[in-house]
Image 1 (cartoon, rainbow, N blue to C red):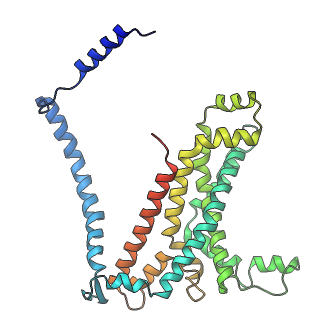
Image 2 (cartoon, rainbow, N blue to C red; image 1 turned 90 degrees about the vertical axis):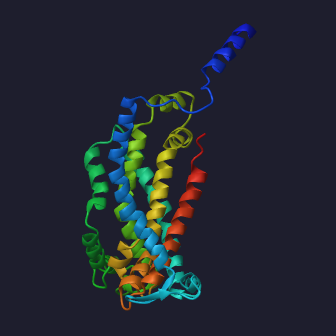
Image 3 (cartoon, one colour; image 1 turned 60 degrees about the horizontal axis):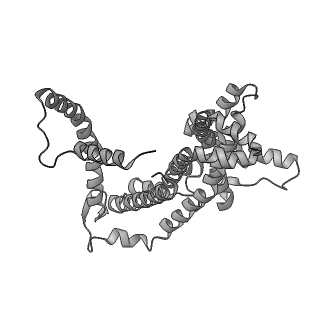
Length: 319
C-alpha cells in the first residue's frame, strides 16, 4: 500500500521532471543536420502532392465560379450561379437519388456477405481454403471493362439469364434487363456485389486472423454459444476493420463511375446514372461545360467529406 510519505515523494519527483518553461533548448549540430536531412527527403514529395493535388483543386474551385462552353469561360454573375443551378437540375437530382439507392442497398448487403464469407473461410477445419479464398477474391482483380462486357452479354435480351428463366418457365418472354430503370439498377447492384464482396472479405479475414484465440476460448468456457461469441467477442474486436470497410465502401459508391458508364451508359433515360457519371457527361461530352462540372465535383467532394466525418465520429470510440 502506498503511504502518504511515498505519495509526497512521488509528487516531488514529478515536479522535478517537468520541463522548465522558456525557450526550447538549442539542437546540437548533429541533431540539426538530421532534421535538415529529414526535411530534404520530405520536401520533394510534399511539393509534388501540392502541385499534383492541391493546385488542381484550387483551380477547380475558381473554375466552378465560371460559366461558358469549351474554352470561352467568364466569371458568372452571380458567382455562385453554378451552385444554385444544381437545385433546379432534374438530372443531377435524379443522379443523387440513384447513387443513394445504390448506397443504401448495395453497401449493407456487400459488407454483411463479406463478413459471413470471412467467418466461413476462417474455419480451420474447412478444406481447400486457399482455393475458395482465391475464387471469391478473383472478381476484384478482373478488368472492369471485361466484366462489364460479360454482364452485358449475360443480361442481354437473348442472354444466358433469359434463357435460364425461360427454361424454368419463370418468365413468359425475354426481359430487357438493361432497358428498364428498375432492372438496369438491379444489374449494376449485382455487378457491384460480385466485384467487391471478395475484396472486403479479405479485410475481415485479416482482422479475424489477428484476434486472440484465447478470448474465443474464454467465451466458450463461460458458456457463450456461437452467436453470442460472434456478436460479443468477435465483432467488437473487428470494429476498426468494419469502420474502415464502411468508409471505403460508402466513399467508393458515392464516387462510382465505371459500372454506370460501362454497364448501362446511365440509361434508360439517365435513371441508372451516378453523380460521377453525370459529372463526366457535363464536363467532357456534347458541349463541355467545365465550370458547371467543377461545381458538381465540389458538391460531391463535400458530400463525401461530410459522410466520412460522420462515420469517423460515430464509429471511432477510442479515447
